[in-house]
Image (cartoon, rainbow over all chains, first blue to last red; front, side):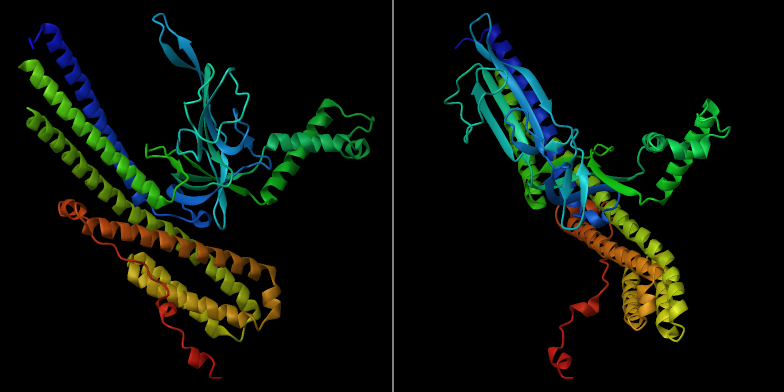
Length: 299
Length: 190
C-alpha cells in the first residue's frame, strides 16, 4: 500500500493521541497509588477519641434531621445525592447526542455514627462511591416514574436520560478525610433578641426594672440599659452552659484524598490498588500504540 | 522503537513508584510520631487531673494514705517515662498507674460520702473518659507502628528504607498481665 502524506499525518495524530493517553495513564497510576497509600497508611480510629487531623473512620450514615433528604429525581430517602438530566438532540448531520441540561450534587452534611459517638461529614469535593446508581429514560425534564430495578439502555425510550447516584440512609461507610472539631456557643445576637422579646411580654416587670423616671414608658436611654442588661445575662448564660462540640470530617486542606465509600477499609484499599494497575496497563498499551504509530509514520 | 518507548515508560513508572514509596515511608514515620503526640496530649491532661482527684479523696480518706501515695507515685512515674520518650517505660509506668487507680476506686467504695460527692464523681468520670481515650489512641498508635514496621520490612519499602533514616518503631503495651490465663482453680478455691 503506498504511503501518502495523508496517511503519515494520520499516524502522527495517532502517535500524539496515544502518547497523551500514555501520560494520562501514568498520571492515573500515580494518583491511584497515592490514594491506596492514604487509605492503607492511615490508622482506623474510633470517633469518641478521634484526634484532630487526617483520619480513617468507619460508621453508619444517618440523616442529621428526623426526616431524611429526598433524592431530587426519584424522591428516595438518602444522605447524599448526585443527579444529571441529559436531553437527546440531533445535530445538523442527523446524529443523536446527549446534552446535559441539569446537574447537581448534594452539599448537605450528614451524620456518621460508630458504636460510641458520631460526627458530621461535609461531602463537598469528596470522591463519593454511591450505594445506588440508576440510569433511566423519560419524556420530560423530570422523571414521571421511579427508576427500574435494572439499569439498561435496551428499553431506552424518551428524549431525556436521568442519572442518579445516592448514598442511602443507614449505609456502612468508610470515610477518609480531615477531622476538625469546634465549640458551638450559639448566636449571641439571637439570644439577646429572644430575651428582650420575653421581657416585652411581661411589661410590668420590664417597667419595674428599667423605667428609671417612673413615667410608665421606656425612653431610648432606658431601652438601651435594658438591651445591655439582656446582653450581660445572655453572655453569663453562655459561659455557664455546656458548650457543645461539633466535629466535622471534610476535604483536607493539604490536598490529600477525601474519600467516602460504602466499603470496608481493606476493600477500599484493594480497589484503589487495582485501579492503579489498570491505569498502568492502559498507559503501557498506549505507549506501544504510540511507538508503533511513530514507526509507521517514519518508515 | 517500540522497545525503547516501553523501556522509557517503565523507567518513568518505576522512578515515580520509588519516589512515591519514599514519600510514603516519610508519611508513615510522621504518622507514628503524630499518633504518639496524640497519646501524649491525653497523658498530660490526666496528669493535671489526678492531683485534684487525690485532693478530693484526702478529705474523706485520711486513714488510707497508701492508696493515695501509690497513685501519686505512679503519676510521677508516667510523667518521667513520658518525658524520656521511652515507649516501653511508658507502658510499664502506665500499668502501675492503672493498678493504683483501680486500688483507689476500690478503697473509695468504703466511703459512701466520698462516692456520693459531686467533685469525686465528676473527676472519676473525667479520668475514666481520658483512660478510654488513651486506650483508643494506643490502638491507633500501635496500628501506625505496625504499618511503619511492615512497610520498612517488605519490598520495595526495605530497599528504599535502606537509603534513609527509617527506624523500626516500638509498640506501646499496657496490660501484659491481662493477657495471662485466668487461674480458674484459684478463683473458685475460696
